[in-house]
Image 1 (cartoon, rainbow, N blue to C red):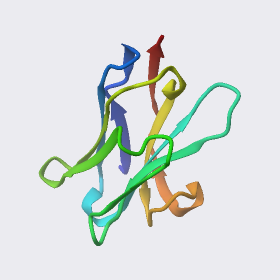
Image 2: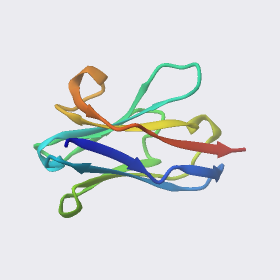
Image 3: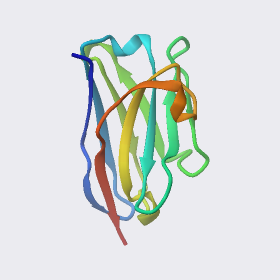
Length: 121
């Protein structure tokens, strides 16, 4: 069964850090681009960042650049999103997705159910 499961969300104070995990089962995550997206209440889902399949390079939204880092652990079939210097505006449900890659949700085939991140001021 193909599945993506996010974990690591929670409540953190502004300026703090969290590391989200995206664990895959039923397929090999390293053969896909993996994107992170987030959705705050009343807002559309927005792109956070991506790790590309072929090059392993990463790209980020301007709003998180320099604060967030995506990495892979192929042995664990997992991708991570390290979030530092968190701000209240980072509060959202965070989703990981596997597919071609990029900033368009339509480029992804598989989605996790999301994990809540809440940043208090």
